[in-house]
Image (cartoon, rainbow, N blue to C red; front, side):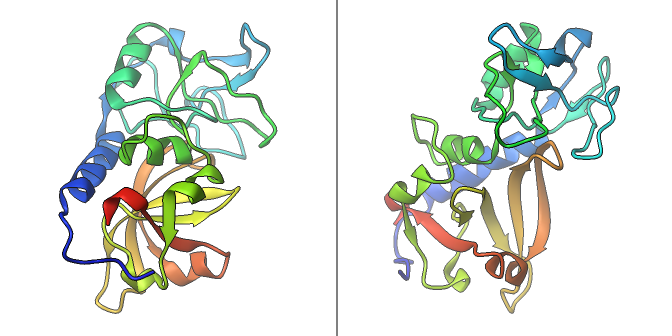
Length: 208
């Protein structure tokens, strides 16, 4: 579909503002917030703290120091405020499993890719990269992407589109939560790289 460009942009402004809050949140963890092992429910936890090196993901946050960006948490969802409270309460800061078959740990705080989109889109119930399809309309071209829309590969990954990074609309500024980076961050990407992998642009049905 081609979106109606005459609609109110307030929803999109709020979605992008929320996404940047995940990128920019500042927090200071303690040793209580790191953990590597099985939680009380049997889910294996790997927090992406700098004390635990891994070839599969970025180990970055440091206890006792101010860190920026919400950590990745497999299957996780929370607002920035909920994350800040969870850290103070001693919850584990993020969870980056070695495999996609890992159980979700409810002893951890942070978001995964679809959890990030769920919060930024203002959806009450946690969505997955598959269930987001029922709440979104596919765009005819990535040229039609607008702030707050997503690049989605169902069953794999989802990315929030912020804006085009060039006049040709070949590159874009995006915000995402990835296992490999183990946090929510922004970066500029080449859109063709994602299109070639099967990603497509989608807009939230309530946004147009």
